Image (cartoon, rainbow, N blue to C red):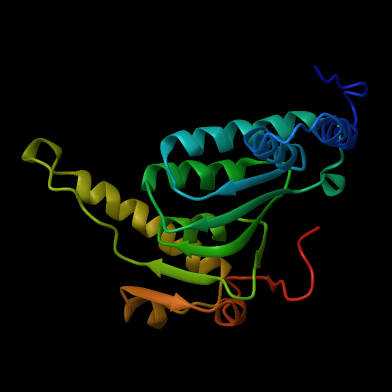
Length: 212
């Protein structure tokens, strides 16, 4: 059983866990992969693929944990949380939870497109304080959200979804150079990292370095 000797120093947590992992490695790859995931979390890294309520809740707990760790730290000196995204979308409500978590976090959250940010994942990506992309990643945003065929008793659901869609529209317009004309004439839009960078969707394309 490994033990943290300095609870005030997250770097010490990482070093202790990594040293323990490789000192005791017995060839069990499943155990190694679990250790790599734990090490990533200790490095403030969270990987997002399918967007589900379970994943959204896990991410919220993850961000809350690091905000508690950083409670006594000066805002400008906090080490950022990195959200690495390779996702084709998923649950809209889960995506909104993740967006709110990012926006409410006092510790900065950076987003990194490592493959695909499609549909709901696109708006999660936009929520990052700083936004990065791998050079061969892909972006796709979809303007119109799918509606469920609900009965008369739930006839206001479409209006509810439209209100959420308006919020996402405003988020896109406020933080990027996408114009109303661009938005209105397309139901969806595929973007390369360079195009996303030119539109201020992406702050930097990582060509010769990784996010620190």
